[in-house]
Image (cartoon, rainbow, N blue to C red; front, side, top):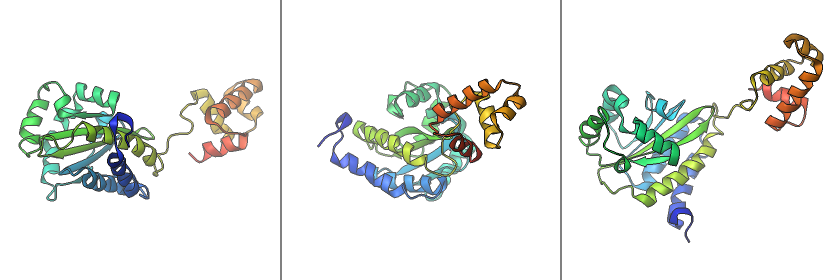
Length: 247
């Protein structure tokens, strides 16, 4: 049996194994720990890292990522102390690749500029890491995950492994959005004025009082409420008010 990108049963088994390991995580910390342990086991690589941030670029500044394969913590300490601002995967070429495809291998990148070139030679290669790969996914609530796979064997993560990781990250995107603090903002699709109306609605104000508060006509308020219902998928004013109140 094969699927997208030629993936077979064994590849899907790896994806399911990681998802099963992290699906019951109670919070982000537990989720990240479960992911790195399960990915290391499923893909057989020496080290796995899991950084998070408000954007992919911001994730490189994560001061407390989840890692495995670095028992003493020396590699991570060195990275956080001296190298996180020079990471080759934070270069424009790598970030563009991550945005376009969800993953990038070091070998796919053009020769990096300084100081990223020093990072490759003096950090990655000095640590004996020849296979270096990064994958990303949106976690909701403006948070992004960045998962790295590293190994001394330069072919430890091949094209099929990379395709499997991209599939896994698409599924992790869904699982992560159930975690506390990662749920998407239900009012994100509203305009600023619609938000103002909905916030006042959540405080129990009538259309007439909202109109007076915002210096609008009552008909205009009704239109804003109607559009907010359509945008959020709520079926009633009460449901919309509760949604806003529980944000």
